[in-house]
Length: 230
Image 1 (cartoon, one colour):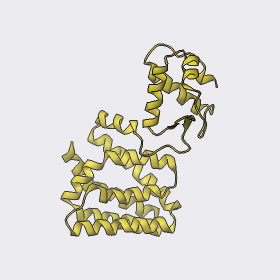
Image 2: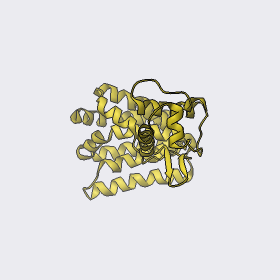
Image 3: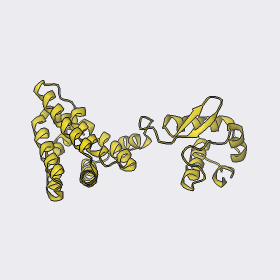
């Protein structure tokens, strides 16, 4: 396990430890279900203090990458915890890209994952997507619509890709749009419903061109809401 046996160089020790563990995962020296060497052994092989190793492990645990089992050791999780701390979303939020950059990100990503989902969705997926539209309509009627009601539609389609990489990245991307979608829910909620219905019809019809058109058209109302949230 070469990545975890070479002493780390100077710099942020905890970051370097994390980099070594990441390198071991990339090189398949570590894989899901494997346990990390004991804290003392890892500290010795990397030439660092046990406190630094402990801090790195805590960070990985917070991110949902590892699980610390009392008396049993630290294991790489079989599946990364989606409820763990997502460092990417914090990085993107701090970066505070321009409106055009955020728009371009959604313009590139959303049609792509929706097309993938259209090809892979099960009947159960399609039913769930349809249910999110009904729920949004109900909440608008009651005057209690929120960003989450709109996002539920997008998450339902995203989950229909059945691709954990796409779902993970897509969930991060959708988080960036939450504030502006919340503004849309206050300003033009009925427009969101109509947009969702058009997207859903094209999705069910498996009409790629109409799906693309419906998705792109849905950006117009959201784009003005995006301007208001900056």
